[in-house]
Length: 96
Image (cartoon, rainbow, N blue to C red; front, side):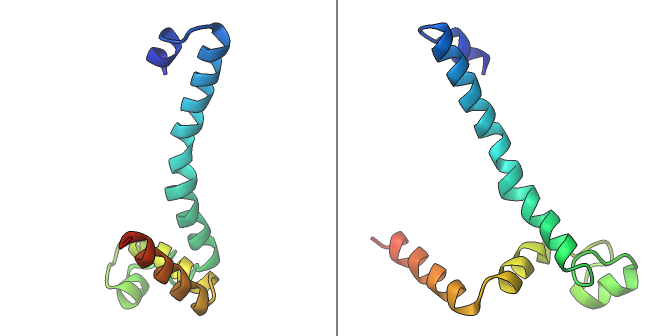
């Protein structure tokens, strides 16, 4: 951010560049952290297990079931047809 501000043409460019860099820095929070938190709240029995015995029975890991948080969120929230459509669009976009 400092380099962007020092290399700017004017004060308004420096402020805009700094603001843009701040938005880019906060974006991973919404992409990575927020879905995990939502999954932990919605699927407390599967993802947010408290006792190690229950976690071991559900996901095979006595510490936590955080590896299954995002797939559980996608499969639990999106309709099954939507998942197939998104997968098809992904493959079509990849192979063009």
